[in-house]
Image 1 (cartoon, rainbow, N blue to C red):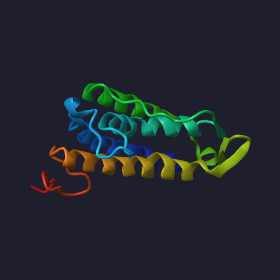
Image 2 (image 1 turned 180 degrees about the horizontal axis):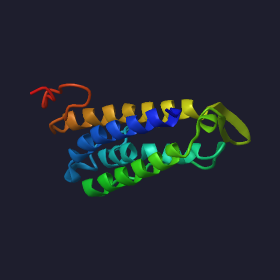
Image 3 (image 1 turned 30 degrees about the horizontal axis):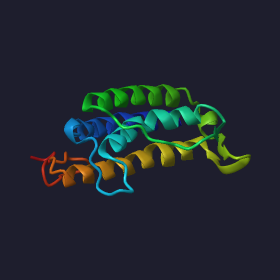
Length: 166
């Protein structure tokens, strides 16, 4: 088994879970924010949808040179979020599937302003920036849903609203 195969299996499983969470995002609440320093629901939902494909695009080459400031767009509908997730997962799977073991273990760098901000094997980038970062924001999104009194789906086990064991 190639290293990338385990990542692809994880993308499939976590993609299904993420889809269940994103399906609950109410279109009429996309402008809602829990705090003035927080992203609004539309921004966070779209970010969750786009993370896998965006980060996969970053690791498709040996480095990423950042220019300008990152500004997260906001979704205008739940349908847009779900479509973005499907596109993002397709991109992530295509990129990861194309990484042989030597490439996935090769070094990748993030640069900005003429400086190297980080350098690590692509596998570490995939694990930390694509997957862990994705799960972090998906968890954040589940809190937004709870605050909006939207039933939270089961993610890794029962939520207060849903049990995979029932």
